[in-house]
Image 1 (tube, rainbow, N blue to C red):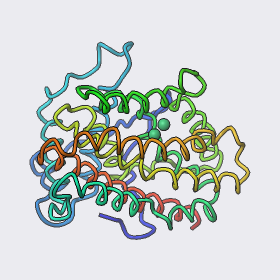
Image 2: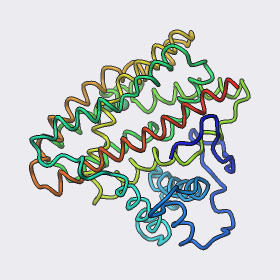
Image 3: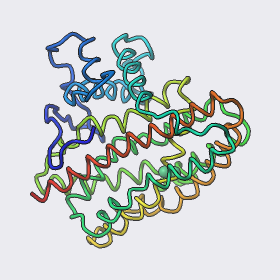
Length: 338
Ligand SMILES: [Fe+2]
Ligand SMILES: [Fe+2]
């Protein structure tokens, strides 16, 4: 649910520095309700979710996914999938809640109408007002806060791309491989997208720190929904079609937002090298969106109604979650002016 304008996330988290990406440490506060009650208030069948409980459970899920995606040096502490019953219960409750938000009457009935439906959904997801604000009005601190919000997802994007390729074949596999090769900077270490992103993030993190702005306000249910959705879809093999749908609409709708970030940073005098990542993605993601449609969706959407439905639910859910996230982060940005 969108929060009232100007209101902030519950600031009950503590950030632990020392790694390039922050981890959260205080989600396991002593529960005041039973775990089942927490699930019920975070993901209710009816009514408004309780934001504090939702943040707590989704934060816990994010912590689990970050640990799961850790590198080889962390092998001894990488959690096994599906062995923690509470993590599984959070995933099941959240997935059911998200599915209940999708109006299945709006989903495409067959592959023939998928194209028109998908392009209309992606086009409506480009947030032109927010893009105008980034390009023309946002201060450097507001821009920096937005960059930091993006960090929760973008810093893991290449691993997600590799994970969704598993099990695909033919043109689908090749299209994802080409996309992944772009993520790898086409073999140039300095062009690896996550590396370029980190270069941006270092600069923007420093701007926020120098301005004394607490990044804790980013840690809200909307940010964790946005980050956890792709991770949940990418990690769990049975959710692969949803991941393909979500990543497709992300690629298809990202270019205008990257262009707005570039325009806004140019206006603010941000050094050119800091926004290389965003500049590259204006064009790369436009290509990725078109290639994903032809190479990933076209071969799959006619295979079965169930597959089409799963891909479409992934598209619709990503849009719902990302819209909520952009609404929230825009409020948080504007609140910096108060
Ligand atoms: Fe990328
Ligand atoms: Fe891309």
